[in-house]
Length: 120
Image (cartoon, rainbow, N blue to C red):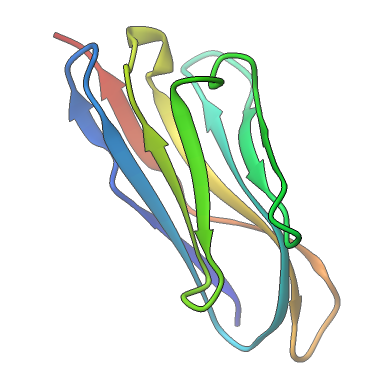
């Protein structure tokens, strides 16, 4: 059974930083793209950043220059370093990964989400 478990969310003041982590576990044959999404109250879920298996990264315009996505392949973990946080970054952040399990078909997996609140 493949699972994604996020951690690192919390309350931070504007201008502060947080580092989110997402670890994949289970009988995994290969992890392709890992990504972070977020969903603010009353809004649709949106892509924040992606990290492909060939180490390419992509950022939403709102994240460019402030957020950095990184990945530890050996630990099956993806990170999101968020700096210069703004109140509009407040959302539940979800980890997503395109995974081929040892047994089963390749598909997208989602974590349970970790809340981030930026407020003074």
